[in-house]
Length: 219
Image 1: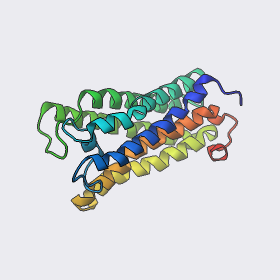
Image 2: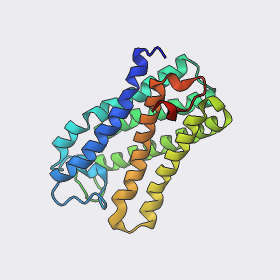
Image 3: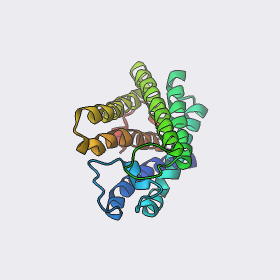
Image 4: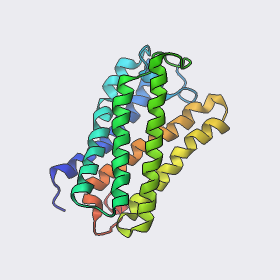
């Protein structure tokens, strides 16, 4: 296919995933006593976290790339009228979730790593999380429904179902697993949205494969 600039921008979703994974991995070494299986990823970027500066550097591509990718996906599916209105609404809500995440967590990062939620900023951080999770769930459900109703975007629907199941593993794991495995369960939910954004970026790179071919053939 003759790729335009907007298609190439889709690769920012994959770059964002790599950036976040690198930050989550390497920042552990900059935080003495941090146990990734027990602690939340957000502890690494807390205001008082010793890993904060390293986190800001390593996650810079993620911070910008996730929003850029999702926004370009929304613009592309709107301009090209990809699939049905239900599908496009699902994409729009997923994009809105990315914007809420970017702005909300930038304004209300955690004050202290691993501490109880008490200050106004920390409460707002949790409220942002509620909105992010809510929009993520609704958008993925809409994309799952749209995918199974329409053959041309069935691949997107299948991916949405996979990452939706992965997202649910987070809260289920937090309740079912001992506290020392909280970090593992939380990462399932976090990587679900970031991973799906990367998948949408690859679809954008391939022009959403409007002829119905599966994305796996192009990866």
